[in-house]
Length: 365
Picture 1 (cartoon, rainbow, N blue to C red):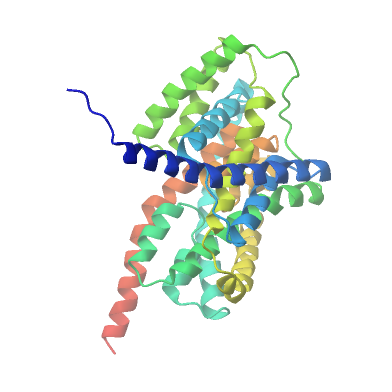
Picture 2: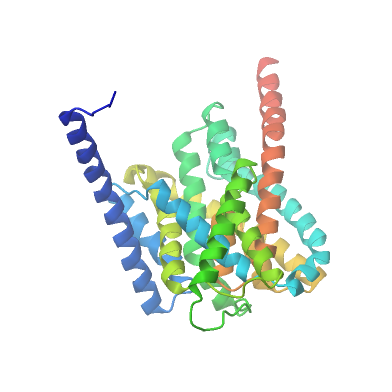
């Protein structure tokens, strides 16, 4: 027996599809325009930064913003695959120094959480729960889920987390360039695109990305795609690079996805809490940069690369932004995965100990 949708159901499906298409078209159009504007202004990582700024403005103006999940999936696949093409045996040979920088990264995460929590509690007068969850550098989904059950002010937590990522993506590339520490040294040779090799790279990256996502690897699709592409290039099976026709839209989609976090943010909330949240970003970034400078002194690595690796932002976004600036993608991904994994393990334990102790003190009074 054949199943036939009623005419009114088909009409609703078409109507819903058209309604969803308009915000997506508007979001991607704004992101593209922002990317071109930043490119014309000579801003570093223009497609990511420009899309972020344009879509953030769109969201704060109350317009609906949307990037469909299948489009975001394709963008992360392309970006992971492209990052894998830049990994060389020489980069991996320098992995012997990674334990030193990772140890300092772990210390920097603790210092960021303590420093930002103290600032937001004592200076901004936020509650301890709100300040703690707003201070955590990354693992946003887990942070929001735990904050929702803790009594924290969810609007302030969301604003603090979103504003930190906005500042990092919009300003950090420019600050790295202006500070004189320079950009990375990865250069992609210009040559005609070998489409059969590109197809093979994307197919392998899709398989490894899906496998990593199923295995619940942090940033699974991006990291798995990177690994698959890196193996193909490391073994000499392929030597092709992904063309700008694939990379540029993917950068725009990434930036637009970050800007969408501000959808639903009321201007009244922004005015009330933005100054404290921005000051907290400055505290977090200052601590991270201090530890990055110490790591550069101990390991001899590039300062810019370490600043990006220690940046207290989202795993996928920071890894791709570092790659867009020309820094070692294996180093970027390894450090941000380490930070994410450390937070995922330590954050629930720390929250339990801190908030249990606080409740115990209140109960004893």
